[in-house]
Length: 98
Image 1 (tube, rainbow, N blue to C red):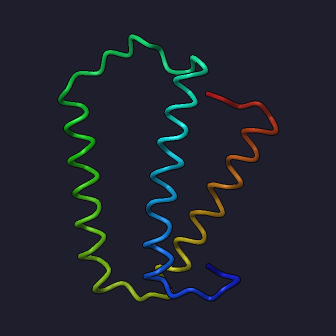
Image 2: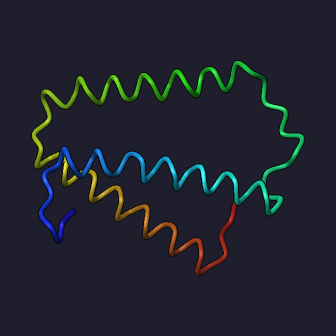
């Protein structure tokens, strides 16, 4: 997005499915590698809360987008993505899994 100078709306719209797939991939890979216990046994209501929180987050983001300037949103998204990359590298390099 930075290199091609995408507008923030396109950047955010592209980032959402990428993050969804990355998180689903992490869950699947952790499940296959045994990092998530097979008998995790989360109650159904926890999954309902998670789905509700995602829906609320999407709605709240839509509402906030009316007042937050695109340049601020862009800086925040790039900063958060960069920090996430740094944390991932540090965890990988130093073997911090917990």
